[in-house]
Image (cartoon, rainbow, N blue to C red; front, side):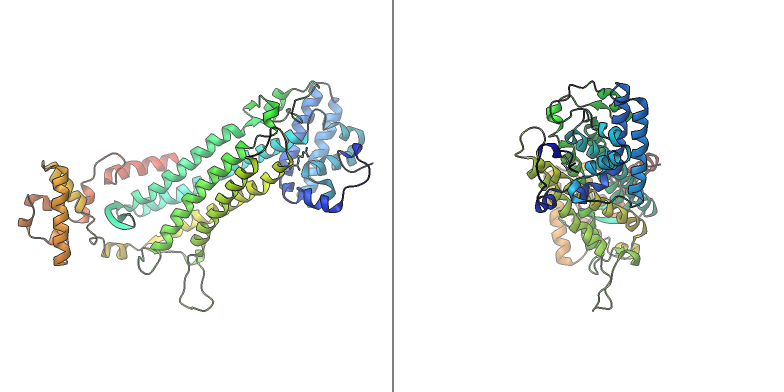
Length: 452
Ligand code: ARG
């Protein structure tokens, strides 16, 4: 008898080149745990509705556990002639249980099975990412705590703009990764809808109980339309979009720290254990981890494009193109997981060079905007205040000095000079969400509570 699950209709074998071309076992074998989990729930449900005896279901469940243990132990022999993980496991079951094993696929198709496996896998992947993202947030919050009190130059256009507390800087990243976690949690809601029971595309005439399978696999609800189920990969696209945004956030941070680690900036002391050297230039300490984090973002965003191009022209229900979803999905996840695993310790172990930062903190007119605001607070119209301070800055450029060095008589109200200097400037902030010391302190407390 043919080894193919669909062999009955065919005479003769499949061309070996076609087997090599159409296989997915080389990459879907990592779904085996989830495939077994789904099959066990399906078998138990079949017993509940009388399609299997309780004893048959028990045998199937136990044999599937054994097959899982064999795969764990590296004892499964993979063959491209068996195409995918679903077929390998079903064949192994039949080899153990004979006719009982041949009943497992009752009321089910690989079309709903593969989406079920992928959703179970994605759900676990989301949970894993959530915890990695929380670890990274904790690293940023610890740095915020460690560097509290230190004032950094804040940049726009990478030009010195206004002073910010280092704690405010680190907490900005905690916010970005919080949105990523919320996005993933939202994506999880659509992942957590049970596909199994849609069968090939139209459902089944057999008396399956989808609600029972839903409860066993801890899905929130059952997918309503069987025709939609077998073509739905929205969840994979959404998930890879979430991953792409995490990757983009990591990449922006990495770029910033590459710049901050240059001799020109010299803001950071990157830990040796997270840098690499040069084979020819003995003095080099290169930020390769940050560079690769930046580079790998392209790969993740590429996976998103790949998935869009995959689904954009597909008619309803299953088409074999969909087999190609997995490489993009897995690679995007693995890549982001890899980046997060090094990002958290890198952040924790990186020290800001406080003296270097402090030595030039009064450069670049970081206090100019606060000076303007001090004038506004005294009733000067905003546009006039802007012009006055602009003229003062021009004066400083000519005299090669700072605003605080200008004689008091050049200021429209001499007492506004009290707003000058980076420390005074920073102390003047007060709006919600600003870098005002009390505001940052309050938010730091909230973050520590949130990430406990
Ligand atoms: N290997 C296939 C995949 O990963 C499994 C589903 C196959 N279904 C089918 N009707 N050929 O998509």
